[in-house]
Image (cartoon, rainbow, N blue to C red):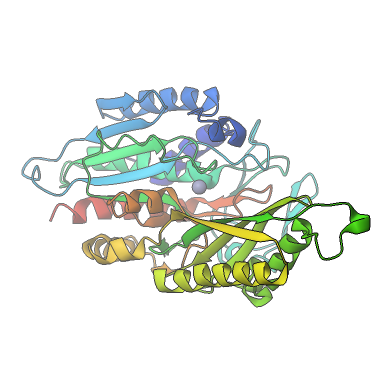
Amino acid sequence: MENMNDTLLKRFVSYATTWTTSDLEKADAGIMPSTDRQADFARTLKNELHSIGISDVTITEHAYVCARLPATKGCEKAPVVGFLAHMDTAEEVSGENVKPNIVKNYDGSVLNIGNGIVLDPAKDAALAAAKGETVITTDGSTLLGADDKAGIAEIMTAMEALIADKDAKHGTIEIIFSPDEETGHGMDYVPTDWLTAKQCYTLDGGHVGELETECFTAYKCDVNFTGVACHTGTARGIMANAITMASAFVSMLPQNESPEATDGYYGFYAPMDMTASIENAHVLLYLRDFTMEKMQRRLDTVDIIAKAIEARFNGGKVEVVHTKQYLNMKEELDKNPAVVEKLVQAAKLAGAEPVFSPIRGGTDGSRLTEMGIPTPNIFTGGHNFHSRSEWVSLDQMNTATKLVIELAKLWAN
Ligand SMILES: [Zn+2]
């Protein structure tokens, strides 16, 4: 390949200008992909994979693009490695009619990108650090979709480079471009029967060097309150008001362990929804932490507060249902240390300084990790995801692409 930056830029702009917004409501209703435009994009990617020389490409009925690059001669027994990125963009901001704005050799100044959106390096340390790089922004009217089209462009370009380099040695590589990550359903129909890799990597992260090997352990609690209704004029000693019970419950949650009061490795209790009448109330509560021991403390606390509310409201009943949502991938990754070791090695070979930061959320990778396929997340060079201020650095995309190439080679040994 003559110039990787030119290839990456061309690819990224063509993906970013393709409208692939997903639809949460449809995805929640079990429709996958949630929008036809993702299936259209899947077909475009399939053709492109063919054109770079990968013949083994299939699209599943749920629009997962699955491609397999065979091992080079002598590396047939090397472990199979998977790379994943998602095709959809978030619904919060329009992803239709994206007009990427390319700022070559960014001079570190305030970027007035249009439609009232201003990118100020004084308020955005990552942007300040991108001085001298090629920065791609929007025109302020849409998101950019670097989340996660930067990831797709990087995987595609890395595969093209591996195929072009006749000296490169690698094992079998499996690629999945998935729909509906942003709706939280990205791994619902992941073709586990097609995937043979025992280790995968998602390219869906941020600033250059950032590697994510830890995420939240997540539970939700449905707390149901049953009151005793009667005429308010004759309620003394009889009524138990479920509205008051639910409110008291929420106010007893530790305020200093809420999402708005925590960061880093500090977990939280987050009331997400409440419906209430005198007879019945329901509170949906999200619990987040990083270890199961710490999560157990939160689950126990919820049960104790529920008991306390029951004791406070004569005749009232409180019932709690705990449901696991996803687990921190660290435990599974620790069982297979080569996955992170090779990742760190590849990052350094690509010229990036590895930085580990915990994900205060879950990823497609955490779902895969839970299915027994350890899957850390790698930076893409994208920033300010899900907003009109979204931007990506072409230089950082280049580093991510090199990282994928190095990683593929390292697994051949
Ligand atoms: Zn993403």
